[in-house]
Image (cartoon, rainbow, N blue to C red; front, side):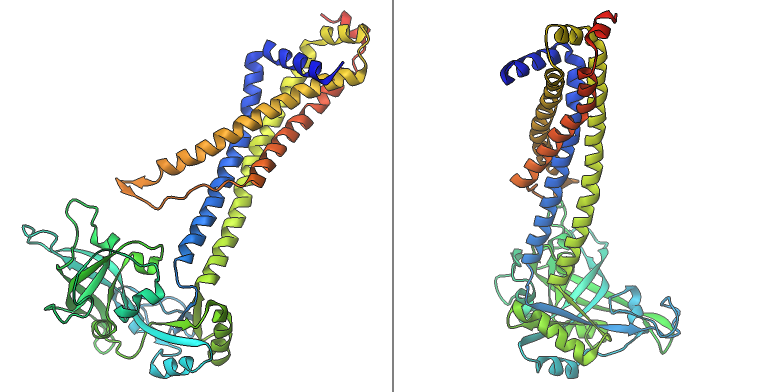
Length: 443
């Protein structure tokens, strides 16, 4: 009996039980397609994150000071604790004392280190931004946003891929041709996709900064009006994509932090020197200063996505194992129902190995069909899911394109087929061990 005849006979046996065979194949399809979809989406997510961070400057280190919290009621934690110097509402950061002030002394010290090309100081904070979105609207519209205050001419140094949705043709960020200082808004803040945008180029907006004055223990406000000179496109950097950009001078006046910066963008001569510069800064200032690099963030995200990938793949594998249990049930039921058929086969001379092979090939066919269909549906399903969730409220979000590697697809296919084959071993062995006399007597 050749293999071709085996296949033909096994396939006919499956067709005789169409519904049961279809449901068993469906179990394998669900498990394999789930594994393919999730693996493709996770690989796509990793590729998307890497692409987003590749748009950032790989030769930039962000240096920030830690805050030492005293007895202030504005901050939680016991005296002497430290936290990263991040902007907070109502200027609570003014009460906490930085362990190291990021001033001109620090800038000169770091700038003297080998392989440091430039240092871009910045102020950062949370403000309320107000704008009259239309001439008929007399009540200003306001919202909270973060502010990045740096030298605007060096914005492309920390964000090389930055592009503008709209910008003024002249005096860009210089403020010389405008009544008020200049400001750049992110597309998210400007709301250009809305029917009535929050702000447009040439329009005036007002920033209001609320802070607590330690001398009077009360809340105070500082405000400044700016002219919008540019609308930035999203680049995948949350520091910029949901912020407004003003000049360093304007930031110092608005936040009352003239000469004491929130962070320093340290520009290395090459991305290859980033780790060395970080070590040298650590040697000088120890752990009293915070250092962040895009490489470190990317490695952290990769570790997270790798762990998440293992977790999700485990869930998909469980689904595939459930399909294998279904194959065991189906094949065992098939053996019971076809006991007389097995008895006839053995009575006319079929050896145990032939009966075993006959049922194993049925399991193999189920696995091959289920795995192959699952691969196709898994790939199609991934693209469908990304398309369905690529928009929210009419706004097009960043699209994650699934990534399918031949090795990953082959692995899922082999695992699906192997599990199906293993699942059919016991029923096939049971069938091969039946006595022909006992089998022929059974009703």
